Image (cartoon, rainbow, N blue to C red; front, top):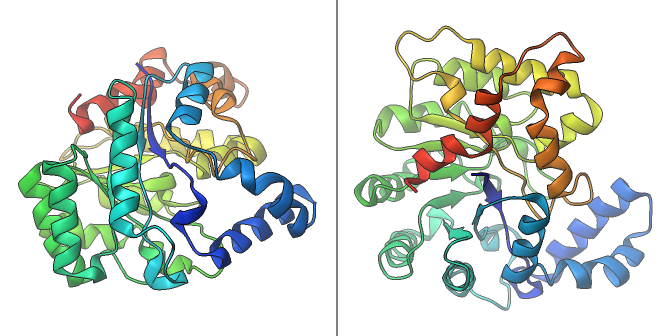
Length: 314
C-alpha cells in the first residue's frame, strides 16, 4: 500500500486574493514566466484541484490513500470567502466522497482559542477527520502554550499532529517552523504522535535526528523538501534518509519505522509530479546505488506506506 501523508485540496475561496498573488509570484520565479500569465493561465486550473482530480493523480501514480488537509492562514493574510470551518467541512466531504482513498485532517490556527478546540472535536467526532494540521508560519510557535489545548485534545481523541516545518514563501516566516520546537511538545505530551513535515526542512534533518533519537513520538514525512532535493541535490536527500535510518537508537523506535511518504500535492506539481515522485522513492535501491548507498526493498515499503498505516491506524 502507498500512502501520501501530505496533500491539500485547492479552491479559490480558501484564501484572499493576496495569497494567490503570492503563490503566482513564487510560481513565476520558478517557471520563468510572468506573474500575470500564471494568474491568467495556470491559477484557474490550480483552483480546480478537488477530490476528483487528486484521486485521478493518485490512480496514475499508484497511490492507494492520501491525507488531505486545509491550512488556516486567515490571521496572517486576511479573511477568505470560505470560513475555516467551511474549508474543513469541504475536506471532510471529500473524504466522505472517496472513503477508501482520502483521509481528512483538521486544519486550524490555535490562536482561535476554544473555537479551535471545538472545531477539532467536531471535525473528528462528527465529520470523521483523522488528525490535526498546523502551519506555524501563520504567526505562532508550535511550543507556545496557546497550542496546548489542541494537543491535549489530540491525545484524548488518539489522533496525530502534522506540523509544517522548514521552508515557506513570503509573507510567511521560516522562524516559526523550526522542528526543535516540537521537542517541547513531545516532552509535554509524550503520547502525542507528531509528524514533522517536509523532513523538518532542508536544515532541519539533523534537528529531527537530535530530538527523535530519544523520542519515539517524532515522525517525519518527505514532501516538498524531498522533491526539491531529489530534483537538485539527490545525494543530499539520500544521505539524509540513510543517516536517519542508520542511527543506532537504544531508547526509541528506529527511524526507518518513522519516515513517511508525502508529496504536498498540488503545490509541488510544478517541481515534480506525483507519479514521478512515487517512482523516485520506489527506486530508492537503484538511486542510492549511484552514490554508494544501500536501501532495501523493505525500507522502501516502510516509507511508501507501511509506516503511515501505523500512525494513521488503518
